[in-house]
Length: 594
Ligand SMILES: *[C@@H]1O[C@H](CO)[C@@H](O)[C@H](O)[C@H]1NC(C)=O
Ligand SMILES: *[C@@H]1O[C@H](CO)[C@@H](O)[C@H](O)[C@H]1NC(C)=O
Ligand SMILES: *[C@@H]1O[C@H](CO)[C@@H](O)[C@H](O)[C@H]1NC(C)=O
Figure 1 (cartoon, protein in one colour):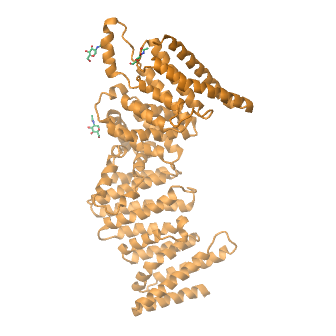
Figure 2 (cartoon, helix red, strand yellow):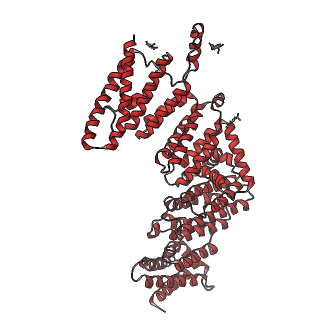
Figure 3 (cartoon, rainbow, N blue to C red):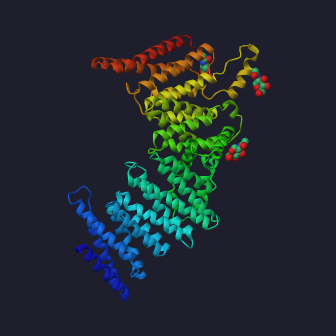
């Protein structure tokens, strides 16, 4: 027998002796000697070094011997109980050493769960997962602990809800740490961790069943857990993901969660409300991704070929419901936003989410939709945030087709909003945009609005007054003096100075185009909605926007010509073209202005 084995044998024997003697102080000391000894062995294992094999051999020997000792019938239960309190952490570190050490470490921890009070084990295992240790960046440290927790949960006899509720934040924190930014989804450690997270879901379901499905709070907690891991697992889609998602969606079905309730967020809110009622310690903050998980559940349902016909049907009915009911549709937009705004989800899923949202918005008769009176203002913050999230896809997706589809979807969501709120939202989006290309896109949306909403004047003299009255009631908020604010934001930026060129070329070009459009439309239609033709406005525009811009553009042209920067020069050409056209138009109209 080598020295390590002999040491372990001796320390365990002394433990057992002091426990048998009932000497509390001494037994505590001897257990801590065992822990120190185990740590000294596991700390030495460092894969990749030259004595890697030697140190792994001794780790394996020690962990096997410890296992043998614990399962031996001659080992007293009191000793196992005492060791169970201190050893799981030290043993879990061995799981990082090698596959065979992992196996033994897992057996030991599971043996503790099998032989000791599950209630104690839940808190011991959670403690082992929260206290910082060297194993913290290795999923193999946590995997056996999570697997054991799943077993301990199932064995809980009394008040499982409270136990589970305080353990889930710990579990989810660990899972989030590894699944938010997984290094490599094919890594065995990662796959094992995901398996354990699903195993915990199985245990939660088993507890719910054991309680005859009567504990509503436990079922709500179970549902939220599944939604949270749905979001975490979706961060890294692999070959197995859709099978996993199918499994998870069955859990959600058990919890009574439906696609409609998930996509509108109602059922998530109900669960959170139910659980927050008497939650002093704010356990609910660990469910930060449940809304994203709700959106993803529906998305996976839409994606998966394996989903049975019944569920598929369900989804079509959901789309129809969203098609019919604007409130629900807006709620769905608010839930899907979490997918677009996520920094960790893969683009592939965002693409599917855009497709799903597009298919929901497709074919909606927006004119008709606005007839439904509804207190829209409460949905505005959420719709605004959703449009901002879709902007992220428009701007950052590398695939031009996806960017295009995202933009089409953006316009449809926008069109679903009543015009007055649409104006405010477009204004807020523009003001909060830092990207020239995004501002250009938003101003092109404003121009489209103006184009679509231009109220034609009734030509007949006697109908003139009446028509104008009616028009002032229903006319588009875009055809008002406020439309100048869009142009001004770009041409005379709020924080002073002229626009930055050539960086803001796109935005400047779009603003000039917008201004030109308004000017031409009003003057040829002989209307005055935006007051663009009033002398004051024309002079102000000339003096404050166009002249400074002309000076700026010639300056930039001279500079870029010197540097022979062809790209910048090409970008400047259309700006100059539209700028000079605007100047011409303004001068011409000033002549006629009264
Ligand atoms: C639309 O959905 C909302 C929210 O679920 C509901 O309150 C409202 O009654 C529904 N409207 C119609 C017309 O069904
Ligand atoms: C103006 O609106 C009123 C009531 O909505 C309507 O009776 C009238 O015919 C409208 N006038 C014109 C010129 O459209
Ligand atoms: C347009 O309307 C404004 C105010 O309503 C007025 O001051 C201006 O003179 C009008 N301009 C033209 C060209 O009708």
